[in-house]
Amino acid sequence: MQAPIEEARRELVIELRGAPGVTMIGIGECDSLPCLRVYVVELTAELRALIPDEHRGWKVDVRESGQIEAFEPS
Image 1: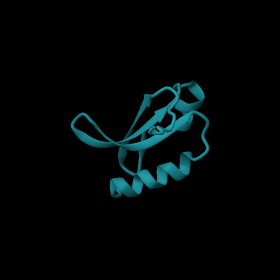
Image 2 (image 1 turned 90 degrees about the horizontal axis):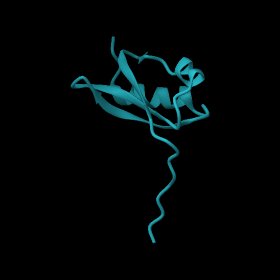
Image 3 (image 1 turned 135 degrees about the vertical axis):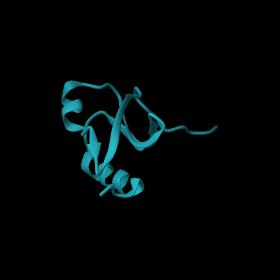
Image 4 (image 1 turned 90 degrees about the vertical axis):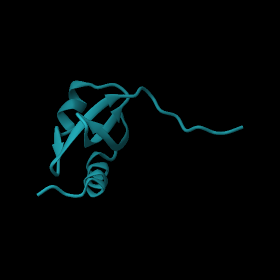
């Protein structure tokens, strides 16, 4: 049975916490269906092996984001 996507996202955040190169985990759309989206600085073979293709019944899409820095308004 498929878990609610928000719950699956929270679990994936915990699972990947501290993984070097993971910048953000969110919810997106893949082929017109909701999916989990993992953003990484650079997709390496090590990260690809660490990130599942599916989590709790939801497709996991990996995207390279480059380095993300906090925005500080002036």
